[in-house]
Image 1: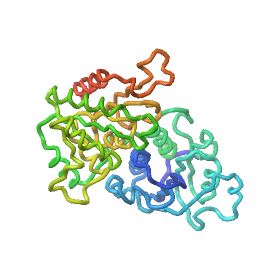
Image 2: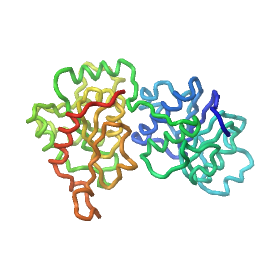
Image 3: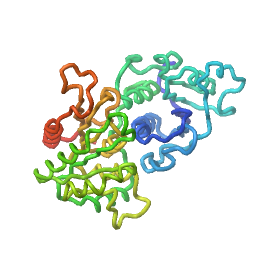
Length: 349
């Protein structure tokens, strides 16, 4: 299949599990914007998984009306024998383009049975795909870059959408009220969705870092999710003058909260420091220059989608790098990375 596609319907298959991972959804925002840019006016159907879709719920403001239909009850089995089913999934439906974002061949082959004009899938290095990315199938790249390769394969050209997620003006107005003009705000996100996996730099280091930023005349801004509410009192006491905008929302309307508010607040930050976490991806989607801390995950795969990134790996602070925990990252390295980010120009939107 050669030449440009002209189509009006796109099916994006994410998976058949429960859709409850904020970070994994935020990583897919560049894919959504790329499809919207490449196929203007196309109607997008999104299969996010079983149960409520995050982009139709808590993340809806970030989807910006880009998704026209959600399918939340389609389960595709991993069993290869399921491919032999008599009826294809979504019987009676036809799509111009099907984008399969996952790698399990059994699911890919079932999806491919849905009538379509073009089918794109990374499974088995695009073996079942009608098109491959420009330059051919390649291993590696961050998760966001791998998703953009799918859109590039369909469009027949590289696609590089903005790293900043658009939001309605009301969200930015709320962020301005919470973090007014004037101070140099430094975002700090000390948590992570799976805190027991070793991804969290010690909280005491974040406190020391916040005090260091205060001493330099900057204002630390902490971002804490619901599971980190227990840290709030100690952080307030340990870092006088720090801001906690998600928890101090006087005058901000009730519906303006949650992950989209983090994205809006990120516009107010001069720089942000985060573990490998959903909050880190949200801050990057808001345009904050990032200092991202990694162990045991690898920034080559899990780095947030932004050109303004300093990735610090724990493995780089040990002789052999093997079995090193995130606590190996020294305070001075993170403080220095903040200073360097503040002196570097921001990339254009």
